[in-house]
Image (cartoon, helix red, strand yellow):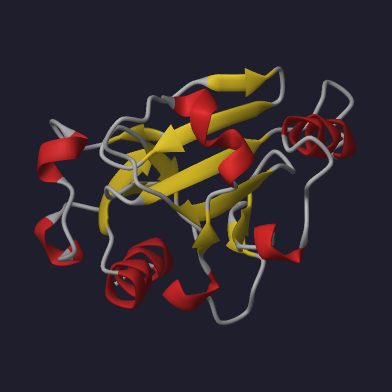
Length: 165
């Protein structure tokens, strides 16, 4: 088993999330929403340079990117502005650092009427049932917490819920 396949298997086991192999952030399966699986052994990983997480209903990921200078502070400032200054400890949630220097913030939410969208120039949303993210353990991607667990996922900030419907 490769280290990428092992990381995908761990994510599938710990969170119960379906995964699939990727190359250059693109799925290496016919249809990732249909083909993603919690069983990593069903895939050919030989061409993979990472893996994707098919976000399940009930999960929203805030994707905060870096600016053209590679600085993450501008993206976080935009996110804090969206939260209208209401960023508190309750918004501290499961995080993954991205290859570009950005971050994925994983939240729980009722996603049935949500849409994926760009909320600010450096802030995107990925909605469970509609989107995927590159998984931690792929080259350049890592969990910000040494032992990530589902218990670290906090509720999606209420002040942003209306922006995704």
